[in-house]
Every structure is written in C-alpha cells, then in structure tokens.
Image 1: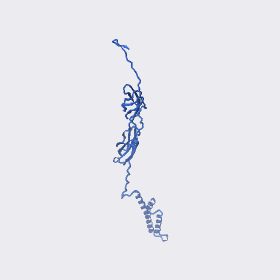
Image 2: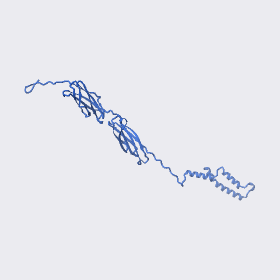
Image 3: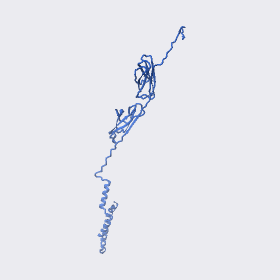
Image 4: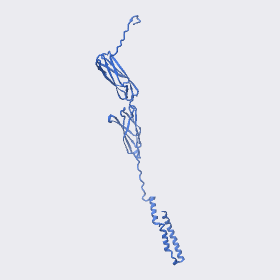
Length: 307
C-alpha cells in the first residue's frame, strides 16, 4: 500500500500465478538439411477442459511449410501434431532457426508454448558423377572438315541434385536434358558437339550445395595414309638400271675362266708351229693382231670381274 501525491491511499492488487494445465512437448534432433523437408512432431496434453485447442507456429526464417491450426483434445488425454519446415537448397550450412509452437485452451484462459533451436547443416558431401556414354568421331588430319560428338550422363545420387552443367574446356556447343532413371534418380544428359579442331572437352557439374564434379575426354585425329609415288614409264629405277647393266656385262664379257682359254685358243689358231716357221713379216702381223685382240678383250674381262 502506498500514498499518492493527492494524499489518498491505494492498494495494489495481487498478481495471481497459476500453473498451466497444458503440457506441450516437441522432440527433434535439431538438424535440418538444405532443400530437404524437415518434420517437428509435438504432443499436447491437457488436464483441463476438453475441446478444440488453438495451435500457432512460427519461425524466424520463414521455413515453415505447413502446421496445424488446432487440435481436438479430450480432458486428461493427449493429441499429436507436427510442423513441417524446409530450408532452401541455397541456405548456408550452420544457419540457426528458432521455432515456436503455442497452444491455447478453448476458453483462452490457459496457454503454453515450446521453443526449439534448429540448425541447418549440409549433409551432402558427395560430388556429382559423370559417365561418358558414347563418342562419335570421324576426324582426319584436316580438322576443319569434320566434327565429333560426346554424350554423358551426370548424376548426384541421393544428394541435393545437379543444378547446372557448364564447359570448362572446349569450343563446341553443349545441350542438357533431364530424365528419370532407375530408383527415381534424376539423370542429366549432356550432349557436346564440336569441330575436330577442338579435340578436348571438360564438363563441370555443380549440385545444389556446391559440390563439383568434372568429366574430361579427348579425341585424336586419324592420320590419312600418303599416296605411293609412281615410277616414270621412261626412267627406270637405279636398281633396274644396275640389273640391266649387270646383265649386259654378263652377256658381253667372258668370264675369267674362259677368257684365257679363248686367248690361248686364238693363239694356238694363229701361232704357227715350230715345224713350219713363217717369215718375219708373217710373224710380225700375227703378233700385232694378237695385241689388238687382247686390248679389245681386257676391258670386257675387267667389267665382268667387277660385276
């Protein structure tokens, strides 16, 4: 009790505190994943009046996607509900979320609430996987006249999913399509087409949380065989000329075994025997003819020996 400035006495009313008959509990591991639906189950129990209890849910990040607005509850019984939250895939790992769930009795005279601290953590640490499915090329040494094409499948398994595919290396064109594979896995099909003058390509795939996977491929040109040189119709090769020369020498030059015999035979044919000695003039003519014959035979004999 206190005295006012007007010298009148006033009594301050007592504030009455009463324990709520509502019990609100929520169980959760407190860890959310970016891009993944997260459920917070809760239980409401009342020892008071039966009826429809008002439920209000809010969070400081705006991640709530669904929550009940009321629960029907019998006196002394429990009712169950859940709040759904989803953090965007781009939410930085380590982001904190404060979730508040409130319950109010049908008459509005009883009230209770629960506060939860949640954390967004990136659970996807696997990079996308690239698998080359086919390569079609017909590249020659003249690269500007031909093209090649590559097809690859890119997947992120059970991760957050591939967000974009780009070229790190290569001057060709890149097209992507998405299909559903076995087990409901999303497959990104990348098709690359380029000139054979750009023989290397590297694809880069990034998932929703920033994990990066790459895919590299290179082709080689198929060399074109050079045409064989054709020999001239009038100019024989050196081997042919040598063979012809050898054959000519063999045909015209007597062998060393036969040349002396021929000379001896010629000598025997021209040289008179001692029994019939010719005159000096006849002997001189015979000797001169023999020397001339030997001079003609010697070059051919030498050529045959060298061959």
